[in-house]
Image 1 (cartoon, rainbow, N blue to C red):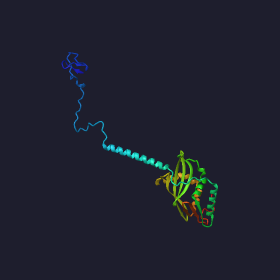
Image 2: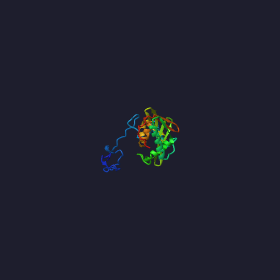
Image 3: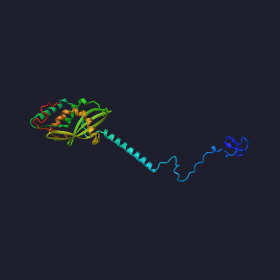
Image 4: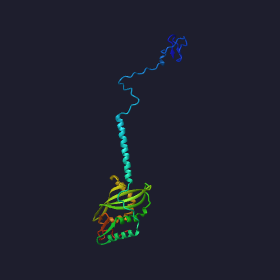
Length: 262
């Protein structure tokens, strides 16, 4: 309300002249309840008045930049690992056709060597071994795992004193190779094959994951249980670039008189 300074009459705030006496109302003629509170003057060093928006400093920009660089580096590492996992390993043997007759002959030779009363050895080339695998694993062809990868074939090759068992699968028409490396150790008690390394494509499997990686070969291991028993009864195994030589001691130290399944 505007209060007239001449007669004290309270006028409407929009009036210019007093409604009672007709005097011109001054701007200062305003009641105390309508007077706005004076603004608090700013004093230097007063921390209570802060700027609404603070521009990011150099340190904050540096931290943000470092985070982005680390994120890009991790993404690049994951992409590189994926590409390595999808690349085919070196020295993969060509696919072999299943040959039942050859498999039966090889099984008969091993049976004769194991049951012979005298020490006897059998030489097996890697080509013969892979043909044997092709004949032995026909039931697995076309089967899929939990990742919907389709089994194509298994293969074996020698690397020094180690043997590599590989599995080729198809994931959406893309070949995926899994390889398990075994360390062969022979003694008078027989031969053992200890898994020492794994590889997916060209990507090595970390040592602490090897136990779980071995499980992906379970179907192949189950299908090769009988041939594995043949090898375990040999007292000496010699690996060459061309194949492997197995020696059985004779005198019934193999599997007794059990028949070897082809």
